[in-house]
Image (cartoon, rainbow, N blue to C red; front, top):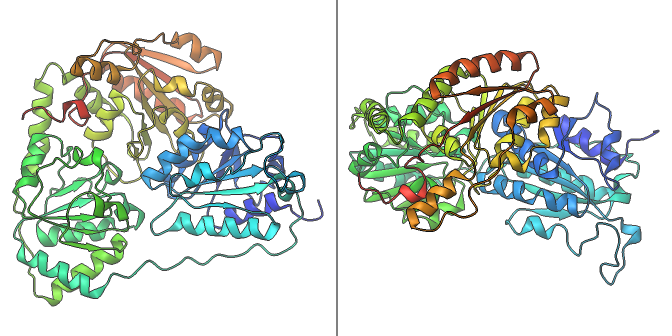
Amino acid sequence: MSHPTVATALLDLFARHGVTRAFGIPGVHNLPFWDSDPATSPRIVSVRHEQAAGYAADGLHRATGQPGIALLTSGPGAANVVGAFGEAVASGSPLIAVASEVGVAQRSAGGPRGLLHEMADQGAMFAAFGAPARAARTRQEAMAAAVLALRDAWGPPPQASYVGIPSDILGEPWTAAIPHIPRLPAPVADPHRIGELAEIVGQASRVALWLGGGVIAAGADEAARTLAHRLGSPVFTSYAGRGLLAGDPLLIDVPVHEPEARRVLAEADLLLIIGSSFDGMNTMNWRLPLPPRRAAITLGAQVAQTVDLDCLIPADAAHGIAALLEALDADGVAGRLPWASTKQVRPAAIDRILADPRTAEAMRMVQAIDGAWPAEGAVVCDMAVAGYWYGGYSRQPRTHRLQYPVGWGTLGYALPAAIGPASVGVATLAVCGDGGPMFALGELATYAQESLPITLLVVDDGGYGMLRFDQQVFGHPERGVDLLTPEWGSLGAAFGIMVDRVAHAAQLGPSLRLAHEANLRGEPRLVVWEQRLYPPRTTSPRWSEPD
């Protein structure tokens, strides 16, 4: 080609701004993307289903911080990614869904005329989530839409978006320069509001901090630690904030759903929420015993609809924390000693869980994974009982390590999402039940073809274990939850993936260590444990249990 096409120019744009991988499936309408030069464009990892492209792109972002790119074809290809897109929107992952649309030259001004893959408004599927959806009609509009999508992805806050480009435009030559996009500055916190917050903090004697994924996105990890020690505050994290203040004595390193953690929160006289939307899954639908005063520093507009706040400051975590610390200095607010006995919270909760015969084996699973999977590796949990346990109760040594899809709650996330971090060489453990992997078994072919360093841990309870528990709790007949599951050894062999079966939690550690060694050689592994686990207190059927 004498000139790059619009499609290859868009990929070059993404590469110049930090994107190293894209995920997708070639289709008749989006083939120009596959003409890209590997030397100047993100490497395209071909998956087996468009939903997997979305999850893999989301998984890559959560592990590395770079925007996730899913390359889709028109109509059904774009529609297939909508579930993954919804999870990304709800979790604040900047997934950019780039899809072909039917050619401009073939369209009728009167509406759809029966073209292959034609839709009246393809972008409306994505706009339904409140995300930006831009449909281009010219080469220039296509490049402008991609530029704006990158800006959405950088935030703050990071935001998913859709870019639709007609198939005939994708193949047109691009002769202009590839633009360089400067990052927009983060919103500055209102000094008057910061002053109000500093006064509220100064009046409180027992401040608790609630830190969310926005702290990680803003790179404010150490600033949050500084604030916590300045105020002597116990620190709670949302699921998206797992890994913040790792190993710090002020961290309440157990879900706030557990009574030991809830009691600490109830004793506070001020809750300061930073970088979190304070959503229902994290807060038992806001039934937690909250302090009498609450304030927030966050760019998530949702938080104002969750609980009443005495002060809300729309700012990113880094700028907001820095401004608050400066205001506290100006007001002469002295450093404080810790007011809560935080060190005993996790040991007390874990000992109680291990002493309960219903939950002991699940906690032993969590401890086995913590002991066996390396800190530099990633762990991706599915919406499964095993995933609920590890997502909530594990020790996380760093940020960007754990992925737990409770934003929108999409079953089937883990198996395909693991492709994202693994595609850049991060050894990744996917913790699943037996139901979730069935959504994306075809991606085992991606594991094998790409020699991905992934270990898929399947805790097989013969169906939808969480839903079976729901039916038991609510007194419904057990219907639709007991399922035929594969013969895992044969399934792994079909893709050339070795399978190891374990009989109890004590065998998980050695099995996972061997699997990780194989992963480092570029060999995916499958570990299967046939076990029914009792769900943790973080699941909604247990929220009403007495302490």
